[in-house]
Image (cartoon, rainbow, N blue to C red; front, side, top):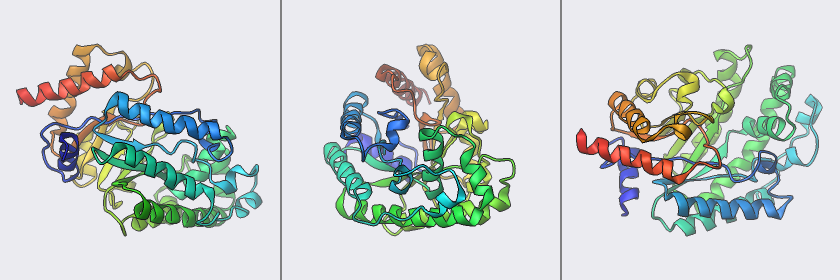
Length: 337
């Protein structure tokens, strides 16, 4: 077992690793292109190459295989949806659709490229997120998802269930045909003041858990990402009993650090600590400031079941030398503890 794989195994098992893992990731194409992998071959070519270049340049402790190009479910990308009737027209694409075949092919190639040297996780969204992301990233309409949700909650959930059929087919084939180690599962609460805990538990949570429980047929190695990209806020307590092995959330947006989060999530492994937004310490801090931040996070959270990373994706121009500073600070922390 490689040293990187060993420390991540220790982290996953909620042990004190020989060195705290350091894990960051970023996108390889624009937000619009996240939805165009099946319609523009150039998009997938850039994603394939970008993922491989990232692995070679950053040499990450674990690889999150980005699903850039596959954010768009075929029922969403084939037509414009602006009404509840459009939501009702969302249908499952079926197990033989390129949406599933091409993702399996892509994940297989990246897993083979990694060759088992580090753990690999594939990015999958909860069913409602596929709808939200199309409306926000591609249509650039940040109100449509919640507007249509509250116009007809049952119709939105029914559409989510039809998308879930395809997501579960994808999971089946990933574990049958690739060497993936786990799933990075991205969820988010409804970003609307009407969406209280009761709404979440009745409409959002069942779809989240449907996919998580399907993954658990193959592995319990689920890293849940409670997405706070763009400063979207989530109530972490709503996710405290989700059956994930690792928890990642927007520590700075939620103002909940790794130590507090570990308590919320029952002492399970946690990953994060750095703000991913432009102009923050991650991009502009000098070596001493980075070192001070690393020491501060680890002094507070400890090193048992802790990995350092960001609240969400870092900018595409993130310098690998910044990663080296963080790894160096972690190694220095180990020597001094």
